[in-house]
Image (tube, helix red, strand yellow):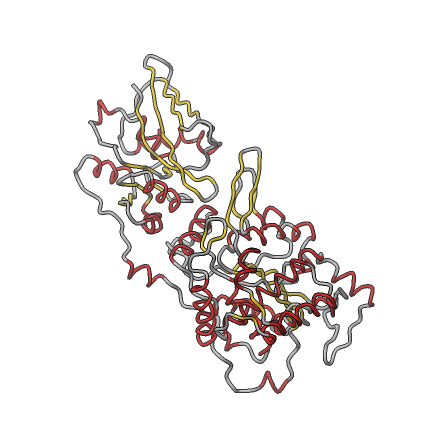
Length: 516
């Protein structure tokens, strides 16, 4: 007789059903064989299962136990199968019958029978719901995260004794539920504010446009001019995430194991700032069993690369395709996974190796050849994918010592959200790769043709810019998308000469530093 207990796992950030099947042969030496492409952690489950069962006085069938994780063609990893494996090997003749129908089980076991949290529970709960399960049993510490799925009863369990009492009907565990009010209260307040940044009005204005259209940004300026301060405060002026965006970001962080224990749902836009020594796998994702990298952890938010030229050039070149596609596919011997990575790239750099080329008071000690070598660490194709390029100048004493208050992030966000709302009406029925089109930077060629309509003077200005600046086809489209965002602030469907002129000014800084 084969016993079947339902569980779930993740591939990428998508959950899928796993049937834990067990058959036993008596009068054979005591052994448990786990098959179905398990990883090392799953193969070690026998020790945890036997010890936990012994600690809680739960009877296990004797003899040769063969446990199969189906589908056997799909690689399995992690410790989340401990609980369903234990349930599949229990001796129900001694324990008594328990009803496992319509139920899904996930959890790691400690040697004392405690049920410990695992990664990717939200994706598993969503998959279980879609497959028609009525209940999913998860570790107590994962329950709030799993309850975000809504539409399936999430049963939080602390230990095996509590679970068995529930299954036998002795003491029922109440499902974990989060109301919409509680979900709204989870939203974190922004702790960083633009009012902390003195001066830099031009840079703030450029970032305001970037936030409305989700445009990539490059900031060039001397050390201490405020580039990092500006970048860190960018999420505070971006539009609030929708519930679907929040769930998708939460799923990525849950799979990666970076979701804070007290944060069941990520409601603030992610901000990731990896050090320039990050590896290619750390940035794009990877490993023996692929996990999300920094570009995926920044999904729906900001990826900030400070000291941009100091990053390994081979590593930064990996960004090119994900910046265009909004996803990254990682192929390993163990399998292939795809992670979403629709992020806003914000890069900051000095104008030269010493940092003071063009400084108001300090002299640059770099030779022209050294400056060009430093700037050329960033390739032309990658630079071409950055919509906005701005200079951040050092501040004068009068600006720094001024007591006048700068504009708060909340006020800037109101303008950004209004521009975003104007664009949302235009994109109401538009999609990109099956997902709703949300920001101007995500527009494809067909959308640019339909929604970026310059006036006659605007067309003439574009022609002059294309000829004189030597723009690529991508650069031309980027200027139109950027002008579209500028026009959204004016509630204008047509791209006027002023809109296009500002877009050109925000994109042609590379001519000053790279001579392109």
